[in-house]
Length: 402
Figure 1 (cartoon, one colour):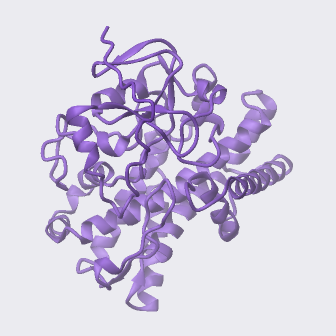
Figure 2 (cartoon, one colour):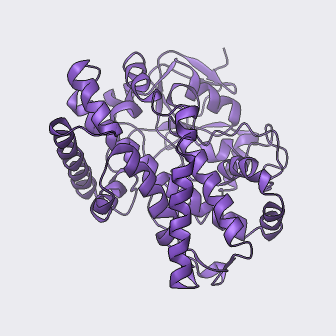
């Protein structure tokens, strides 16, 4: 096994640059070519190996020799003030399998597809409101956010009218530089307390929603603890609300800034599913890296030896621009056919909600393009503002005319 290693006493600080819009730092391309596994120091926690290419990414995300659970025993390398060891995101098998099996019954392709008419109805109702108020309209706060919120709240059984409260708590999970450790902890505690209250209400008055089903599984089958249940529901709410709405608004921005691709999609709406996959690849939704994994034994990655107990950081936006896998990787192309992107992760931690996220993105694009085929940004692109200091990239507003 190779012993090629970066032995620098003071590894370079990561992230190398702040995330700007949806740009992918050009340093990643150089690293993929010259040093695909490099030692870095993060703002919080211990030093780690940064992994940038597609092949190694699949290894660290899918190989059981890399553990998420071990992060709890370390000062995890991270960009957030506090570690995020929340429920299923911080587990290995068999605990991870136990929780995933519980949820897999909900997020089947068949069950998600049955939700399509309801999602279409929500999308059309939101656009009705946008038209009634007149152009310009903000696709972020008047479409992307309420659409994602309505779908996940209905599925879980979270009151949509509480969104002004829980949206501010959701930021605590992805804040990097905009919150202190104390503010992050306060937001997390508030969200968990809110979810715990909902579980108590569903225990007393069950309904046809996911929270009621999880409470039943906890009480009757002892499938998960109260803490696991609260943390798991919190993760689902975050992913279904903030992540989906951010991916949708960033996707619309990409289409508006690529008018030739947008026009092609208007002409050929049958390409919407393919376009969604390309948008998932092209949009670097995660600003920098996802959660660290720890090697349980010595593993070689691209000629670099990662020793047992050392951590690796997966830079998924870099892997999705790997020239060895994607032809013309920096080009946005809705006609791309070979597209093994890692936007939903890989291996046992691959996003369970991927089918639902895909459905929402497909419905949103199809309905928008049918009703607003001449949609255009209502302000110069350079005037658009992006969220700062967050792990997920997102526009604050996207004003459009039609």
